[in-house]
Length: 225
Image (spheres, one colour):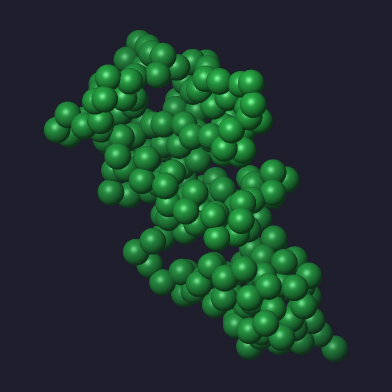
């Protein structure tokens, strides 16, 4: 007979043990640490973490288009340096576009490159036209006003210009720092699982002022994993 578990479908672990695993996940512990604390195998903990990350990715995609003061930027994840290759995002790196509503939430998306057409498509799908878009001076962000956006403000990082009063992209850059710092303790993230880890980081950041354990319990009580 299957174990009764309100948070996990077809459960073969008790609800109490699953809640312990969920608490470890909320605390951002590794699967190995979680296995030690819950008595589950590392393989089982990893499997449940994978399922949780898939669910969080689905939740992230429900975000409505942002409106207001928004910061757009792209960042590069992967090897620190690739011999013989230079330039913006050079080498075997994954390009991630980010859009942040100031003092609120962030949206992330893996993109093939930082070309103008790519960045325009990412912004148009997630930013209301009444928004003010803040970016750096990268040419990939040229022409946003021509697309219908209310205003486009820029800071020229190449000229050592990082903030002009209200005009800056410090918020989205703080998110990139948060993401890279978080992943460092896992000694990097596998390219195959990177998309799910990215969305997990987005989910965590967007609920940084909430009790993540309670958020997860509420989410899974409504729709078990």
